[in-house]
Amino acid sequence: MSTLRRLRPWVQALAFASFCVLLIGAGKLAFLPADLFFRLDPLAALANMLAARQIVPALGVGAAITLAATLILGRVWCGWLCPLGAVLDWVPARRSKRFEPDPAPRLRQVKYFLLALIGVAALLGNLTFLILDPITLIYRTGTTAAWPGLVALISGAEALLYRAPLLQAPIDWFEGAVRGVLLPLVQPAYGLGILLALIFIGILALNAIRDRFWCRYLCPLGALLGVVSKVAWLRRKVGDVCVDCQRCARACPTGTIDPQQGFASDPAECTMCLECVPVCAQSGQSFTGHLRPAAWRPYDPSRRQFLAAASAAVVAAGLFAAEPAAIHDDPRLIRPPGAQGKTFLAQCIRCGLCVKACPTSGLRPSFDQAGWAGIWTPVLTPRLGYCDYTCTACGAICPTGAIPPLALVDKRLTVIGHAAIDRDRCLPWADNITCLVCEEMCPLPTKAIVLEDVTVSQPGGGEPLAVRRPTVLQDRCIGCGICENRCPLTGEAAIRVYAPTNLSTGG
Image 1 (cartoon, rainbow, N blue to C red):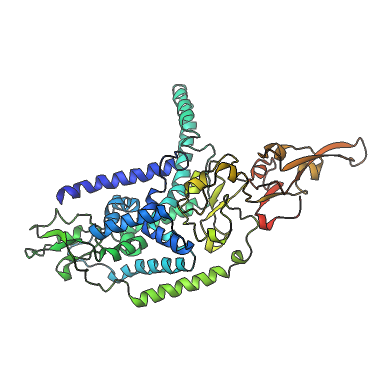
Image 2 (image 1 turned 90 degrees about the vertical axis):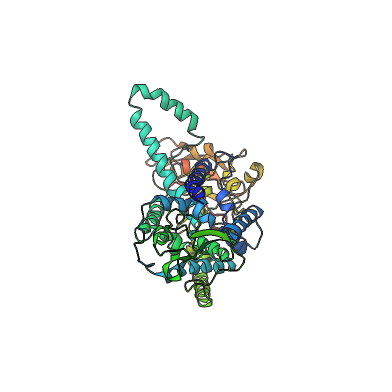
């Protein structure tokens, strides 16, 4: 066991490095399974399949592997493979002192409450609360906060170092090698990045109260794996030679070794980190096979707790259904290709992978456009980035099929919106100044924007002016948004894309 304990930090480092590589390569390196950790996340898999009322084979197989490993080895996922757990282990934490009890044992019930809340809401077709899943949380933080910040730092460092003549050639080589391959051509910029970073920092800061505070008290995935671990085969056992030295209890990062229970540990809380092994004064503990379920603890989930969580989920579902966004969609709520309809909200797990994969950074997590039921789901913001006519990255990377993996020929025919011209702002319409940008940028072989030659009189007389005015052919437009993105006006564009069901009649 001592050898395995020394091996664990290396396994954690390898798992976290794999997570980072998959995150950076998401949407760029097609051979990498960017959604690997989601495939191994049973909470995300079960919630998605409950809400969508369908089986997702890739998620189901991976979830079965994790649950099977938990049935045999206990919560090894939490102690060995979870990328968030690894970060929490690396952050300085407050450890228990001698004879110091767990500050609030019943606080561990919170994670079971959150697990029940996610499960019942999923049964009602709502995945909003899945934002509390640790894998979803760390992916979303990485894609929306860490990655844009890293890209900005790299670009800033290049601009600074490029002033040195000797560094210009290496920087040019680096740019040619990675820009557009790993680094995006457009700087990602997301309004929720700071909020997500603060939430993540807050989770890490909880370590100042207790080591792995998140894992002990809040993690819903840990709660699910903890319930399964109650019947796990491999568990910790304390022998008769224990001398009450308290060392194992102080070394345990999850505080599951209870001096009041003969220094026994709860398998539902034990992450199999093996930190207790080398500190035992008499080698009075071992990890052996068990066939009987572990004893129930006072903080374990109860019927009352489940009913409270179910009631909260029902109330939340009712409030979400009473929002304005649930009755009338925001006219600017433009979803990725194929991700239309209410079923999208029952499939999207808010992971942020599509946001990371979008080459123009046009996809971004919604905050208020889709209401609370659709918080952090992807929305296209054409003024900041358009839907590339040659790209299918979002559908290819989506782990649940919420964004269908359309072939390029089908994606080019999929309507996500329609453009409409604001004639009070458009230069040819409002000021009689010829502007061809939107027509030139339209990527369709048969242009959805056509130019009409008109002759207009000048104010105060003079020679009539020949002006070419754009008009949108709605039966051709697919709503890619490049016209809005490239409109030369500052501020709001003179041509804007609207969701298909909310198309303005103007233009």
